Image 1 (tube, rainbow, N blue to C red):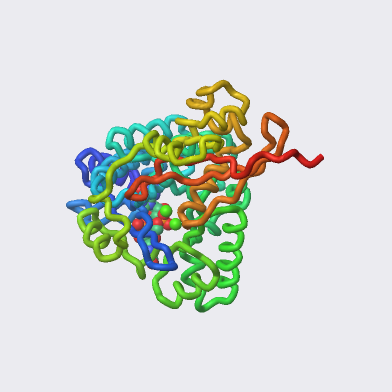
Image 2 (image 1 turned 90 degrees about the vertical axis):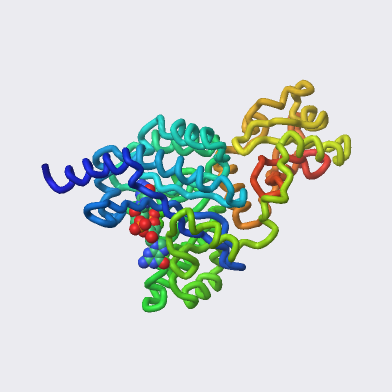
Length: 384
Ligand code: C2E
Ligand code: CA
Ligand code: CA
């Protein structure tokens, strides 16, 4: 048995005995230091060998097909630990490109979240690209399914892969994480500074949220802020830490408006009802869940969509208006940055041009319930 085989065997028993623990590293807003979520990182403390680094055991786990099991266990433990944390916080999990080839991955993730009553809209999936995957169709299908379930997809370690731009343009990402090596070299190398600035610009022009990784100093944070980068992760803001430490970190950092204790839980249906009560009766408005299924719509909305009253509900929004899973990916990114999604122009069934506003609908603890879709203006005749 060689060293990797031995490691894989030990990992298997560590997985069986709960020897792998999730650690949580904050991802913060550079503007005000607010914690927006955590990346979940695997930690293995072997009783005999001590701590074994992820860089050592993750590639072996990947080769021996153990990553699905690892992910499942990390997710279930993390969802349980995070049950009492403020509901606006996301959890980011690492998924390898080989895992995306498995058509069951999305189902497994959904099952882990549903079993723990953890909303999939708070699950972010970080994927690194791989030069070894030729067929992008199955990974793309897996990611589309995850988006349809409400997850957000991040491209990890941007800048280190083989053909980052191909991967970036082929997959439905809404977040881009700039690899720590560029961030760490910013001070010494003008080149790295230029690369980081260009990547921040590239990400924003594609409608992506951009996270700088490996931020260790206030100088790096200042430089990034100056470049317009909004999100960061690194030792400056917090090292990966066990779940038991997270409440203490949160109470020290999270601003008061995220206090979930005092929040009254509301459902999307209730929100939709409240909104329709206050809306003008002829407002063309609908509400959809985070996965894009319409749950309620006004009479005017159904009329504008040219469907019978009540028939928009239950349908996917992309069967009604010209949005795609990419649009959802962008929506999630703009929401993460606290920005507004630009209006969508659409030709209605009646042939006139309309502006559609899509906005997130949240409960009192800032948890995403879904989206409202509203025709922003009365329809006007289409210019020919
Ligand atoms: P990653 O996804 O790029 O995760 C970030 C790594 O950078 C983590 O290393 C983290 O501890 C480290 N880091 C964060 N901030 C700083 C900083 O300011 N300075 C420095 N020097 N390092 C920082 P870690 O936990 O050792 O993980 C290494 C890699 O192993 C991860 O890189 C990820 O690719 C992989 N990994 C970790 N956990 C998992 C997992 O559960 N599943 C999979 N598939 N991969 C994992
Ligand atoms: Ca990562
Ligand atoms: Ca990374």
